[in-house]
Image (cartoon, rainbow, N blue to C red):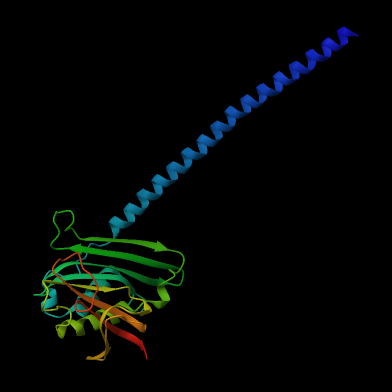
Length: 258
């Protein structure tokens, strides 16, 4: 009886050892599978980065505005040439996150913006433009234009102003010397490009055709002014500024909601 019990115990012990050994071997195999998957994911990420870099390098490095082009007041013409060179559509190219820094003599310090184009019904092309003329290093002053393709429509697209309309309005403001406050060394021109409500401290204007109409002088604004707007802020530094009464002018350039 004891022999049977001892043999039974021995059987169970051996079974447990085999089971544990199987788990250990399976664990090693599972680890190999996991590391293989991780390795494949790393390879895919590297390949994707390389492809993206190749696509970016394929983007034509076309200078839109030279340092002194604002003096001639032909921003729209320069945009049209740039748009064609980049293969962008005329009516579907929209602009966002525009930033222009210039001195009181209309020399450009830096300019950057993003264009979202809808070249066909299945994709959106996002192009980022960046150029500095007065930055500290050579690399910072290099022209940078990168682009990527998105399958889904960016959330902000429908609210953005068309790029051709935006640069036409900017032409009007520039030709009226509205972009360069005389009391400061530099001015910073900003626009999200989006249709929105805003309430910055300072002067508010609406651009009606070629005519600028003043809406209000706001010290502690409570009312939202709705439309596609541009802020012009005076500063004695080309990269640092503060929106405040006496330094900032806001202009609704399109779709003003009364």
